[in-house]
Length: 321
Image (tube, rainbow, N blue to C red):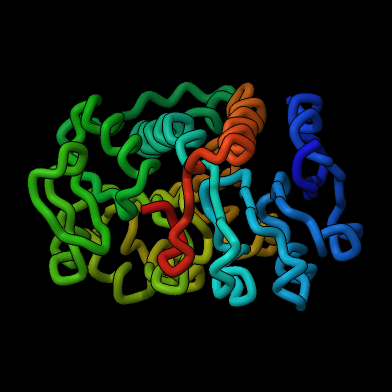
């Protein structure tokens, strides 16, 4: 039998757990059970990836910390705490690739919903109101995708395919990128924001990106533009966004992630005109948990055979290079 594996779970267990259990001495832990079970584990599978329990349960003795942590999500922000990132013996991997196409499709759907005002049409339908009206085209409109990782690239490819003009924003400026064409760095970001009809946030949450969309960024956006966030809620200063939407500076927003989740019932985002709220489900499609489990199983086999792991996170940057 292989290494000792702890699986942190919430409502669901991995679909292929019989195969996982054949490769590792596996125990399953809720958030409450994790502090007692994590010390001495060789591997942690964070099947419940957004839980704060890992940081709270991490062993004080580095020798008792897991040597490998795999996160069943693309974002690893809950795992960027000093005891983990500062331990060179701990390898952190994520589920990069599983969510790329589902989230890209979701972004396209959100942009179409905003441009065609599907929510307004559904309201009219429920009221049995026949109200013909013009809608907007998305072909030829400009999109800035802020975040040039695998999710951002999938978004860019799909939006280009429907005729949108796409550019990117990231740490490293460049031209002739195969998916984005132009990638704006910090020096030209304001130019990209001022040209975009839609700004799509697909960046990871790191110390460098937390709060990156603040009042000054919102003010630099093109008047009447719309914001789509499928990254993390903490990328955005929500009160500043509410002000920009309430004041008419922005025409709307489609938000799948929020600073606090579930989004509190008292949040004005629920009822602001032109705003679509969804419950952090952009990447959740039929069989998505199966795909997550298969990716982890592949890495578990690689570790057993001494082969390089997939999706190793640069712990200083907070994402896979």
